Image (tube, rainbow, N blue to C red):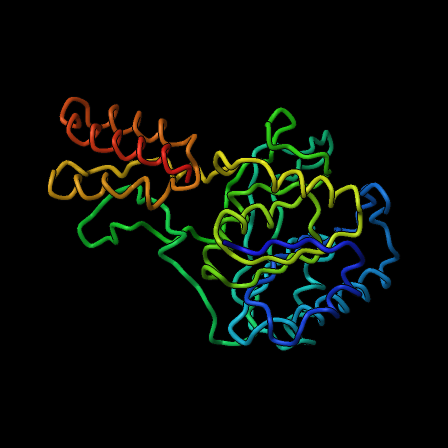
Length: 314
């Protein structure tokens, strides 16, 4: 059973409550300084003031991270290079990846190109860090015997849709992040029982993901209304994460050899769809369409696995 905690207050003050070298993973989605309304506060500071704020909370994040720890930071285009500079030059952290979150829906423009991505910086505190590649692999498009049947590295361009306003999991928050996006970070950069900190909890996505993945999590949130909203979200029964990388649903081509196809199909749901119940039927449909009547035995095996999946409530 994981310990999930949300604390009300300013992140700069609440960070001081955490011990040095006590945290395995930090997932931070700070305000982008774009003037958004967050209920009891507005995201609008002077340029220098915002950089000063960023430097202070990042220094605290660096302090509480374990030597094997990782931090992911969401940021808009205006300030991301400055945050990179703070972590790289001022804090001497180890740059790992510059991740692009690509989404298909976003703000439209008539003059200039419409934005369709956010940036995420991934830094490690040292050169030795946790990274569970097998936990975040995606199915191969083409299977070859030299490939790892478990799948491929997902790369640094991640496609997850925004949480649409009609989605039952949509919260009353202007910058809610998809659960599948956070799931990948948590699985890749922490182990069960590890401590994950979210200094800007917002709609509570990181807490919800950690709750389901058996990580301990501490989050900070300055708006009491968002805290109450998150507590309600955490109390609801789990029916699967609200978003998925669509590559997880695909079945590799060229699985015509039964000795290869059978073990692959047996494991696909457990490997890629464990927390995405809504995607199992799409996967089974793809199996049937791709391999037709030859897949009867495999489909039955996958159907049985789906039944076990439903019964477990995973």
